[in-house]
Length: 150
Figure 1 (cartoon, rainbow, N blue to C red):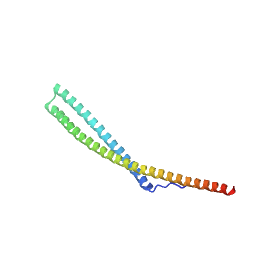
Figure 2: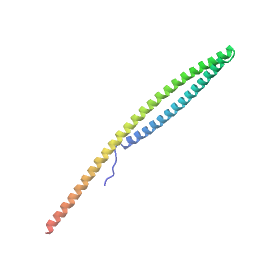
Figure 3: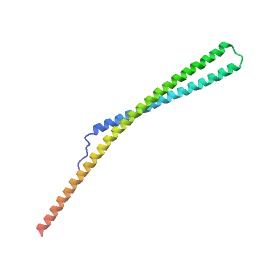
Figure 4: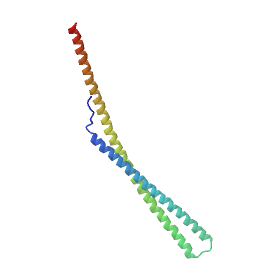
């Protein structure tokens, strides 16, 4: 039996490598998004703590400068929360782009795998036809040899 050789094997291998690279990029983008989300949670927590301190300061008898300082801290933390939310949105977009690239790489790989599968099926059908022809020739030869001997 002949050996099956897919003519587009090199391209299929490249597609597999591209898919693996896209998976890695997707994983890295997800990791960056996760880190940004953790930062956002930490800033929100700090902002909440600052608001609590401000409320406590307003109920106590503190100086006006201390109250203003705490109000400024709350405002600064609000600004950090907004910045971090924007950073999270950017990372989400990066993850979506990486997901789209991964999906495209997977589609391309699957296309070439289907082509390989079809080529292999055709190869097997051709091999079966050759084998059947050989069997038919052998049977014809045996039948002809029996007819001559009789």
